[in-house]
Amino acid sequence: MTDQTRVARAFAGIARCVLAESPAAEVLQVFADSCASAVGVPSIGVSVGPDGDCPPVVVASDERAHVLEDLVSGDGPTPAGYVRGRGRPLVNTRLLPHDGRWPAVAENALAVGVGLVTVLPLRDGDDVLGTITLYCDDWVGLDASRIEIAEALAVTATAVLIEARRRDASAARARRLSEALDQRVRVEQTIGRLAERWQVTPDEAYHRMRLDAEDRGVPVDALLREAASADRG
Image 1 (cartoon, rainbow, N blue to C red):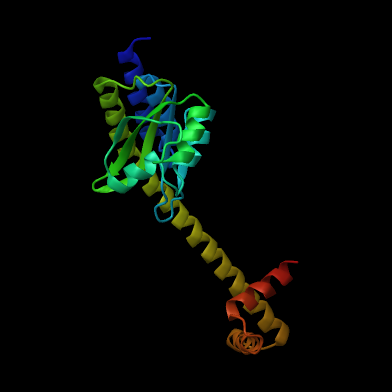
Image 2: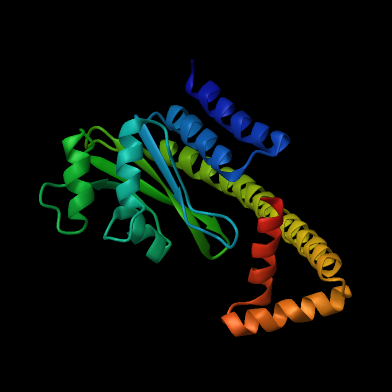
């Protein structure tokens, strides 16, 4: 397979995520797998931070990268943390024994044969959503053309990721709204059953529950949910 074919397949894979309306985690996994092949590096990791209703996502092209990505996406000093903080890429950065810049990452990377990393930001305007880390087995590094391919794929994947996160956030809000409405229906039904049991109006039943909640020092909604659960039981 030629380099051009691998790059074309990488862009096609990301494009299919658009057509399939894939969730954010799937978009990033496709990106990691296809970018590793297109750029010609053994391992790639991608880390994206949380954003509102969207949780953080960490994906990798292989197990080695996944272990390392858990480290580089953490809060300690890491190459990815450097890029997230400054918004600038790290290109062909050697990892050295007893590296004082990011010792935990260097130690673990060297132990699994990674001697050099390139870290690129995933940008949304001035905001850095996350990073892509390209792990190299040697200290030769990536030439300008391969870095350019990785940057182009990163820009494309970021655009798809932003849209996927919008869909994920919208779906999460819809689920919460549905759960709240379902809960409200159950509460109203509970008030109705209590009113029937006590032979009072629903307003009077709610008033009694509110007084009981005040005596117990708990929210009336919590007491109504407890009553609804008892009825279902």
